[in-house]
Image (cartoon, rainbow, N blue to C red; front, side, top):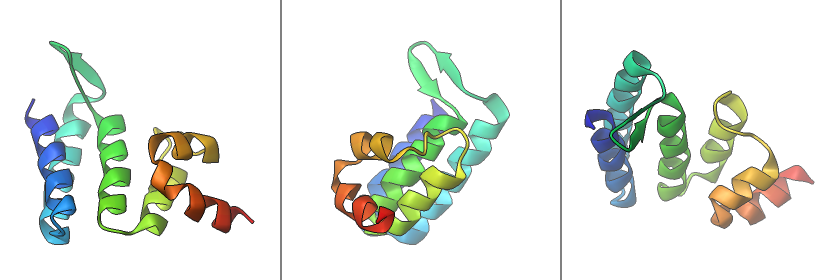
Length: 101
């Protein structure tokens, strides 16, 4: 639960434009995730994979699509195919298509 709350708070900070707080909180979430791995406890799924997905969303919320794309390409636990990124974050579709050509 703790890590999930940190991830959500990090995303909320990013939506509010607070890059430093978002970075601090997602870092703490990543630390927590590294201790537990990908788990499902009482219906709450949390772990490195979820933190990676939040990192993509946080970068997008901070209007940084290049970083969002880099997270998907450099993280083994997040699928890096262009189609998957389009499915998760449709707002990046145009950016991805431009960078692919």
